[in-house]
Image (cartoon, rainbow, N blue to C red; front, side):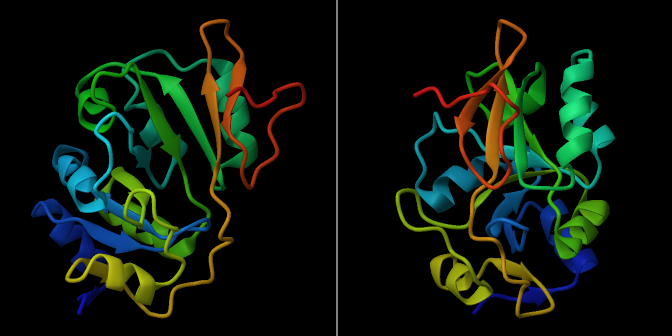
Length: 198
């Protein structure tokens, strides 16, 4: 049985190094503080080369995590779709890259459009997140499914969670040619002229 916690209680568990579960506008999330993110790969049985993303309550918190100047194009797209179902994969450097994307040079960033998630993120600060499912298995869509997959991992209350869209976020990456590349089609239409590249 998973403990059901308020945002403040869950933030305290996060600070103590625990992983937690909470709803978002797309799919439920499994999360930890960045310095405890390594456990997410183990819980999900996820290949180590697959990065997790950083969620926060406000864009400015995410920009501050990049360790690089913020390009106007990044702010422009974020202002259109955050909070929302858009993940931006942007060049980054520093300890957060090592924690969330080992061996990489970028961070995936998102501000979710879910009041419960935003309340938690305001209490906890930015969190390392990934969808609440075992690697290769269908994504969980409810608190019960998430609890069944990750028994004992504390969940954000109250229950039931809001019904998510069930559609993953759109993932756009900033390329070396200073343009957007579509990594995953999702809930947000990509900018005009940006197509999927396999």
